Image (cartoon, rainbow, N blue to C red):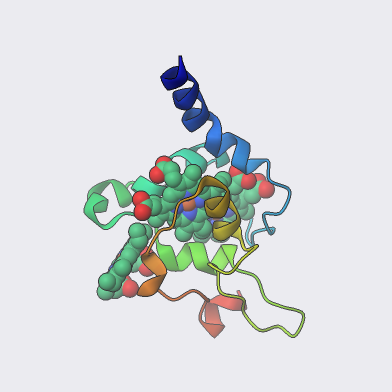
Length: 119
Ligand code: HEC
Ligand code: HEC
Ligand code: HEC
């Protein structure tokens, strides 16, 4: 019984997390795939060892971490980019809730380049 409950929790967790009120509004018209697909599949889309899957984005585009940052990071009131893994930011709010800590941003930039930020 406990195992079933845990499984249900794990299956519904991404959906629940998406109802968090605090996800900052992304830039752009739409994501690289539908919200439910993104919630479920973004870890696989992004991982290095899944290079081939990664290039087969639903809308034909490859999942790029730079692109996630370009659309999903925000700027503070002074227009200074806020690191995407900072508390309360898009990726971080959800990951804190789900208790996952991707190590990606030890190497990858947490803010967009000036060109990306203004597009
Ligand atoms: C030890 C350093 C390191 C870590 C940690 C790391 N990467 Fe990378 N990653 C790189 C390098 C180097 C490249 C190739 C240069 C580039 O394209 O930025 C790269 C490229 C990529 C790319 C293709 C380029 C892009 O911006 O889309 C993706 C996607 C990616 N990494 C995802 C991830 C994800 C997801 C994680 C965390 C689970 C991660 N990486 C963790 C070093 C790292
Ligand atoms: C062109 C801009 C753009 C890019 C690139 C982009 N996103 Fe999105 N993303 C959006 C928009 C817009 C939404 C829709 C938000 C909504 O419906 O309220 C969204 C939705 C999502 C959602 C679902 C959020 C929810 O509330 O259900 C996740 C998860 C997500 N994106 C992750 C990513 C990841 C990971 C990447 C990089 C692989 C990425 N996005 C790349 C703009 C983008
Ligand atoms: C709607 C909630 C939600 C949002 C928003 C979200 N994530 Fe996630 N993410 C999760 C959950 C839940 C997991 C762990 C479950 C899994 O691996 O399927 C996860 C796992 C990951 C992993 C794999 C971690 C690992 O070490 O295995 C990466 C990489 C990742 N997310 C990147 C991102 C990036 C980049 C963004 C922002 C552009 C983002 N996520 C936004 C919920 C979210």
